[in-house]
Amino acid sequence: MGKKIGHQLAKYPRFSKLVDQEKLSKAERFFNANGGSTIFLGRFIPFIRTFIPFTAGASSMRYSHFALFNIIGGICWVALGTLAGFFFGNLPFVADHFSVVVLGIVAVSLIPVLITTMKHKK
Image (tube, rainbow, N blue to C red; front, top):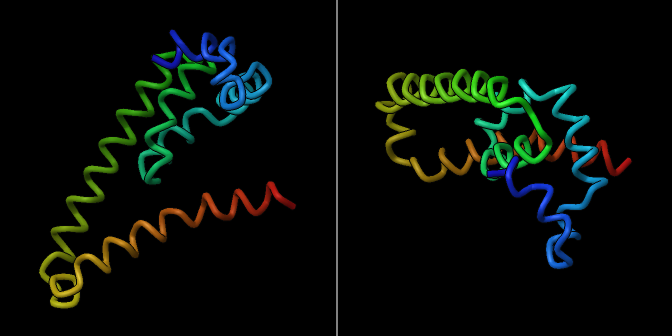
């Protein structure tokens, strides 16, 4: 989807603030340098995993490269979740405070995004 309409969105005034040619070029350079690791790690970061496939497609990342790292990341994400549930699911604290544990996991997964944002602001 990103490959088909990513460059088209830059032509419309409504979307040109979000997707313009400069941002697409920057995204293409980024995915050429860090594409595989971005796709893989994007699986583990809430909100980011929603936009990574579109951005990868819009930046002309090869589909075979995207699919390989997407599948590997998906397998690792499922395995990690399953194993965490198996080993930690029966702990009394986790069972009693499950919503707090889930919020903690989301907060910890956002730490890399916050660090990157702070580095870019400096």
